[in-house]
Image 1 (tube, helix red, strand yellow):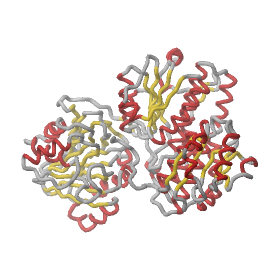
Image 2 (cartoon, helix red, strand yellow; image 1 turned 135 degrees about the vertical axis):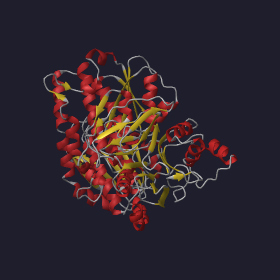
Image 3 (cartoon, rainbow, N blue to C red; image 1 turned 180 degrees about the horizontal axis):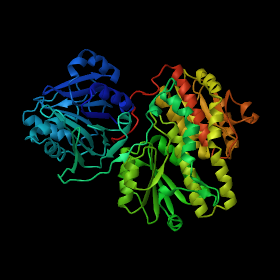
Length: 611
């Protein structure tokens, strides 16, 4: 979840490192630091807080640092140890010979720490990561790659790591297990990072390391080996990434920009994937023949957070359109319990980043149990799609705001495309397939119609910005939309918000309703609306103000509730997408009114690469 950037080459590297950290800051922003080799000395600068504070610390030292030729930097999301300067990375050994930055969690760090203390090591932090610096120092005999490999063999857990040494002015050693590392290949320079966002401004050629790869890089060379010191070959991939897409481009926040990018993002997900001749979807990335599709008799969706909510919508698609038994598993539950994976089961892993630790473990468990495993992912080259070796890329573009928006709508769209493919392979007629294609084509337009009324949603949001608690209720495939709406509100506004199936209201939550607890009821004109209207009456009877999403011109809803967010008319299959877009806007404007840090909400990070 933290961010790593490293550089070796002939350019002045401080701006490269700090700019890289700013692009990685959505992965963690509790503290920041960097280390460089300069005049055969390690120079380290660390601060609590965001990268801006680090830049201020560096300001008076830029001339001195201008001759450095290798450096590593880190922005932290705290796991072991509170966010402070001492716990910020990089960490050093006692002699100040080595500097280490680390993403991940060392499960056996207490055992390693106690052993090192017994051997006379002094610790300057509370972190698990510091043990790595001391271990590297113990094993070093002039070969940094071997020392890092020996240190990592002692580690149980996950790591993405970069190490520099004061007597090696152009060398970085980097390795990964369970936490991503990407190497950027340049002309007379090499970069390493935990995410391609930090590399895209400098190169379009990258190498993705696999688990238990370790690499020694200099400006001219990249030597990749296994931890057992066996040379391995990794392909250089083209990085098709527009750096301007990671800029705000005039919007106040990345989140708002990404909300408004959704018509184009969904269009990108759909483009080239609708086959009108056969009334189906063209999803070559799944790499399944019609016969193989027909043999799948069960689908298990594994995901976390927003991706899990998208998967819950997908469950309705696969059961209603395809007629295939489907269940959604929280990925951590899937990995730790003993799931029943029968022959011809499809495990569908959903992750925006493609690096989510629990979802990646679910992929590996599914593969080990003989399932067909496919991924729905946004980041090309990420670990989950590479290991599953089949799936669907969203092509939504980079998502920088920590609270996911366009990834959700594109994931749901990709799931609907997949259901169309499976449906036409089974019981869905050509006529019904063409009707569904028409609905899918309309999704970008439906989203745009919601965005065109953002100012009206803002007015409503401001009325409820002082709420301390809020409930979201929905039925059918709008139930996951309620869950996602509640998640967005709590993530960025810090209002306690809960999503419930509307039928569960009477089974406990109704006890908490009063005039200070608004309820957002998803009352679109789709099957289940009559029941939702009854639930709204129950809320009104307890004096709760009710905000409803309702289909345009549906007076049966608008005459009943306090405020209405209108949603364009569409089928039940498509309805979750424009509805969630409206709830994203509602949450954004509530958070803005409350003065919250919208793009980087407290305690959160974009990609959960640790347990």
